[in-house]
Amino acid sequence: MIFLSIGPNYTWAQAWRHMWTRGNKADASKLQSLLTKKYDAQKALLFSQGRGALAEAVRLATGGEGKVAVTSMTCFVVIEAIRTAGCEPLYVDVDRHTLQFNADNLRRAIKSEDVRAVIVQNMLGIPVEIDEIMKVAHEHDMAVIEDLAHAVGGQYADGREIGTVGDYTMLSFGRDKMIDTINGGALVIRTTDVKNVVQPPLEEVPTIQQLRDRIYPLFACSVRGLFASGLGKCIHWFAYKTKIAVRSADDGTHPERTLPYWQAKLAHEQLKTIDKKVTMRLKNQDIYQKELTDFSVAASSNGVRWPLLVENRSEVLAKLKQAGVYAEDVWYEVPVSPARLYKTVHFPEETCPVAVQTTKHILNLPTHQLVGAEDITKICAIIKKEAKIWK
Ligand SMILES: Cc1ncc(COP(=O)(O)O)c(C=O)c1O
Image (cartoon, rainbow, N blue to C red; front, side, top):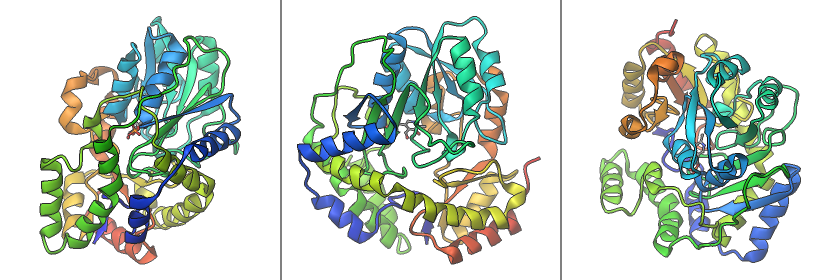
């Protein structure tokens, strides 16, 4: 069986190690130093989640007022982070080929609004046209926040590393990300022009949450291993019902919480070796790209997942499932994901029609360590047989 998510960054051995890893203050300092050096920054702060780091970035970038331009294919927690900082989102429609906004869309969306910052997401590791976007940001006196939740280890077209260009860089170490410690995040401050006093997160993550983070990889390995027998599904249902596991978007935003030392140690190890992971994923991405050219969008620079656009998504997902490939966890199936919370954000569908359509047709395929060339070839055969090109 092949899963797009459910702990793909964890084998049993990695999950076991994650469970018992210990860390100390020096590990947190090492991670901060590496971030500061890698992203050529003034300072790096460690947070319990990426959304906390993003909320602090928005607060520093805007002074806690006005609007923040954000892509219209994003995650619910991004919008929550903007609101936690005291701002409102200004959604910018996407380009269907790159799955994110370009400079023209951004310029059109701003009009005469009080937009104080722009979040650049580099969707699925696909690099944005950063120079053009920086130009618009300068024209409108907006700070640029690079959100690396999808894009750690990726590059812009000119070879600059993603995260080394804007005023603030935010990283997520959440589940399924390139750096995955189940929860975690960082804010890298690359500017001296901050509009608020920096508030380093000082509170500890509650013990219950740390326990959940500790056991999640073992839980995920069990679910995957027992899925075929039906027991995996039951364990999955039971864990969420009893809150042994919690859905990521339900966790709230806690900019006051810092990253536990043991997770800092694991994040440091993963960030140091990120190039190896990128190389592995790009190799897998290459197979998809060669086999499924007609379905592909712009190429990702880190291969976090392989996105494609199809006419008949639910049919294709059902056929994949019949063949033992579970790929329902799409980034993103609605403009502000997950679908169960979409209505609550009051997304302005009329101003972002391309995003509304594109999110109905996008699929993601796995590139992670648990899939090999043979699996990918099998997936490609199903797509070729069952999928219709979205025109
Ligand atoms: C694009 C994007 N930015 C930021 C975040 C926030 O990351 P975290 O889950 O670590 O809070 C997410 C979460 O998945 C995301 O998808």
